[in-house]
Length: 97
Image 1 (cartoon, rainbow, N blue to C red):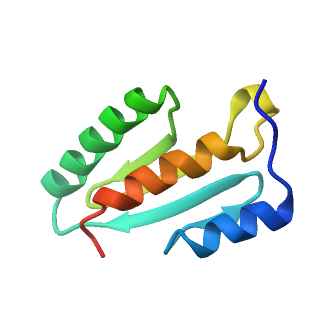
Image 2 (cartoon, rainbow, N blue to C red):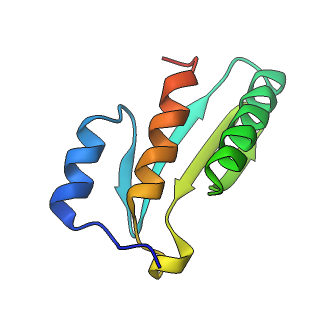
């Protein structure tokens, strides 16, 4: 079972993750793209990264907008290092910056 992060560790992680925030028990980020095709290609890339990390975000997509929410189910739906690691991996290829 993964260990939930304390509030200080979550805050420190968010300082390294531009655009990500804490919403309830998840770290989240919204992205806006120029078109649905761009949003969809981003989602495919997120999916590949999620598979590599064996950790999968909650995804919402409406046309050119994507929202990702990360928490760890086997930690009681709390934020863990797995969430921070996946957010950092997504941040590394995010082309909306």
